[in-house]
Image (cartoon, rainbow, N blue to C red; front, side, top):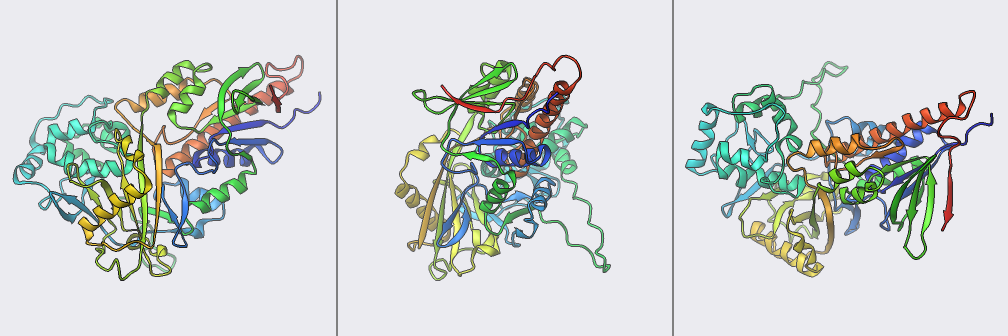
Length: 498
């Protein structure tokens, strides 16, 4: 029996999830396999995007990753980029509430107070009394349940915790509202503590914030430095994207729309391009690393139950305005890492990141660089303002918060239409329905599944790749079995135009 040809796998979506899936596939299926990455935009990276801001690489999408999760250190090591990882300075964050800027309180879990939280500068006397009384109030919780985080916080602590603390913190992560985000998908450790029988929300936050174990002493006997919480790349995420693209050795096709996904007897057919000149691509397996609405559209005919679940995941849009200033013009910038803006403040922005205070590598020339974030779920109109208008809004709010009124030496506006999925109540059930409803040879990856951060996206990419490797291995064994040819037959890998 002739040897079976090497497989052909298509990855739909060239964001970090798609590129990480292609990289893992290459490592697992070898150099002979064909891997095709199909990306609708004119660049790879998705919501990771590095621009040159006054001559320095500057991220205008995600800016950092959780360094204590294993996925990024592992991936950077595989790519030879471990030395490119950098960590933030010791600058601390602040919070704008009631017209004044105060230090962001510590000892909270994404805004949920622990017993050690000190909220005097943030809450009113009645708000402080509500927080102090919460541990003694009876708590009814059904293990495994999910609920809107905002509603739970308001019921247990009152409105101030939700509006002044949790909403701005979660708005920075999800571009969402605390009242529409689900507890279980957004703060899983808190849900787990409640499931385990925590008698109050404060007690659950205490249980969920147990400090990580201390690292062992160094070989010289000195105490080892604790692992920093966050990391970034000295050259921006562009460094990671370039390395993934090179290591994956994939055929990356930019400006390519995938309009349809069809199941074949021996694999999958992708319909590409405009309706007036469609192209078909026949492959053995497919990774869908696209936003939830696009996944729902492509899955509709081949996995309708999964498609319906994906269609229920909504998206939020946002904008990043990056600004660079001469040091003399930004001398009044506070020495903080940035400021979150509480709900109800008369400002357009939801946060400022004082980037050169937070990341030492971002000021090699002495210029002061920062980011303004605008837009939340339900505020798509923000994206309809022209670039000059968005820069004007960011500068006006910067002046109100810091006193900086000078003209920036550089500015960049980055719009993220539908950039962040919303993890609403029941999100984990939706994801389970999507993943369980996929036929063999098909996998999904991306921020719509198990977390919006880069490490979570990498984890879904690797899981998707492993799912397809298992399928391809089974397919090869069936095809190579003695007797009648296996049900999958030979692996097709052809491109035709219809």
